Image (cartoon, rainbow, N blue to C red; front, side, top):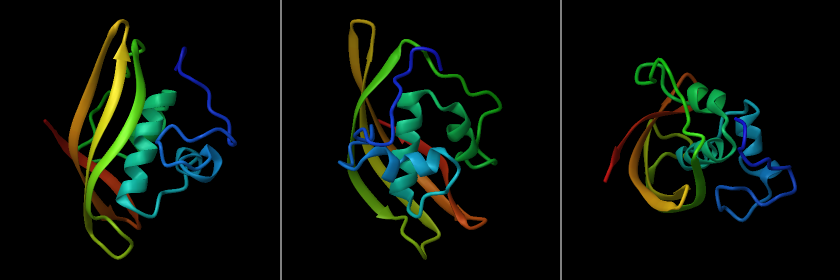
Length: 133
C-alpha cells in the first residue's frame, strides 16, 4: 500500500516480538503459515503495518472473510501488546489471542482491543473472527 513503511529482514519486526523481521513475521507474509495462533496474530498485525492485504485475506478463514478488504491509508499502526493467549499451539484445534494494537490517524491516536479466535484447519491456523472491546 502506498505510504506504508517498508521493513527489511534485519529490521526489528513491527509485531514487537523483539526478533528481526526476517526471522519473525516475514516468512508468514511470504506464504509460510505460522505454527501457532499467536504467531498468526502477530503476522496479521505486521500485515496491517506494511499494508499487505494479500496476507490478511489469505490468513482469514474463507467462511468468515469479507468479500472486500481495504485498509485505511491514513491509519499508522504503532504498537502491539499481546494480553493473553489460550490454546493455539501445535496440536490444538482452536486458539484465542487477546491484544491491544495502538494506531495514529492524522493527529488522533487510539487503541484497538480485540479478543481474536483462530481455528486449525487444512494443516494451518486461520483467523476466524474477533470481538472488539
